Image (tube, rainbow, N blue to C red; front, side):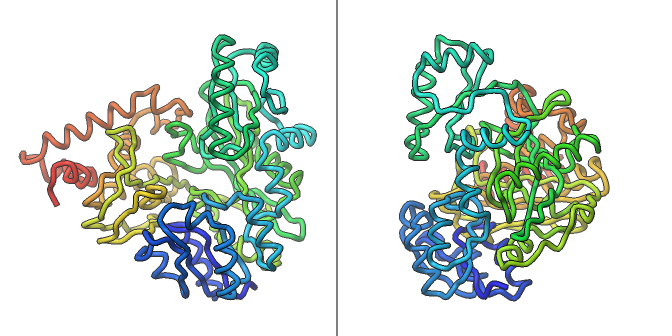
Amino acid sequence: MLNKVMIANRGEIAVRIMRACKELNIPTVAVYSDADRNSLFTKYADEKYNIGKNPASMSYLRKDKLIDVALESGADGIHPGYGFLAENAEFAGMCKSNGIEFIGPPVSAMELMCSKIDSKKSMKAAGVHVVPGVSEAISDHERAKDIAHEIGYPVMLKASAGGGGIGIQMVENETVMEGSLESVRRLSKSSFGDDSVFIEKFIPNPRHIEFQVIGDKQGHMIHVCERECSVQRRHQKLIEETPSCALDQDMRAEMGEQAVLVANTAGYYNAGTCEFMFKEGEYFFLEMNTRLQVEHPITEMITGVDLAREQLRVASGLELEYGQEDIRPRGHSIECRINAEDPLNNFLPAPGRISKYAEPSGPGIRVDSGVYEGFTIPPYYDSMIAKLIVWAEDRPRAIERMKRALWEYQIFGVRHNIPFHEVVMNEPVFKRGEYDTSYIPRYKIMEKVVDYVNAQKSARGGARIAAALSAAGAYVNAYCGQQ
């Protein structure tokens, strides 16, 4: 087993990894920027080291500094969490060259899967169902037009090194191809240092379904079921659930086998996620995220598999504790991402001091958070406050439990997106499970959120205030200046 683990990340994911380490009796090391000096994860760790100023480029993205801290502290493992350097093959290679175990996949698998062009070529050759397109870097707009005519408009331009919804643009016809290609190439270069762009068929309004995989260094690879991630805004996930309403048992098994094929083709071990588009009974492999995902708790809730624990065991050279036959999902789980952002103002981040904070609790409720009452959410990083996860015996009861949990959740002092989640949990299309990635604009969810919050404001001071001011009432109070 690893002797000491440094977590090269912050916030709730750092706390999550430290909890897994604690149960395995592995001491932990936190690294933090000036802004995170008083963060929850620094209080939880056994040791902590300041690594620089507030911007991530001067702290959490300092590969050399992170390696120095690991060596100084005696950490023989580094867990990258997600974001920052989690999918950075160069950093993983630096860990290896310094005798530190990178708690993730091998460098070769990361290099392959981080290039969407190379990964599409490899997966297509292995028999994986990929999105129709051409797996080559495109820089000439005439060549781009020829390819688009060949596969048919509309098409998608995608940055080969992209991620997080960045470097993706739909092109409807050839008149805008030249400008769109140059725009995506510039954005890709500035965001990822690589202007390689490829073209694939645009599939309108699919469902976004991903499969969790995990494998060990002895060659055992399994999938741990799927997650439905179709409630998105600008390619950013907001709500996830498992199992997906769209899959029957046969399709689930088939797609799970494809996910394992993807991982084995890449020579993968540790945890990863294979993302698919699904529409009208057909599915296409999109990409593989070579890390633990934000939404991993819902998989843990229905299977009982502690994914972070398995990551640590695999990194220590141990075999998986599970075979495919041991994965027997039960019930239904939903996750809502609770962010310090303003859904009435285009989801702009809303950092600030949390003046009052109370998490929901009770049967089937889990909260993965990195904040506490009195904590100031800094403006320099992701605005996530917590992940609210529920489990119940079936989907209708899981939705009702999430509604109750949202009602209980009290966050004062900062604006947040709880009203958005309350609206979705009560929305008929979502409740029927008939949504896809176009759900938010197609059903005017943001307009419904505005109406909902305004109705709560109108109820303030009236006879119905006690019933009206639920968890969304805390949000309304933030707007109205009450504490």
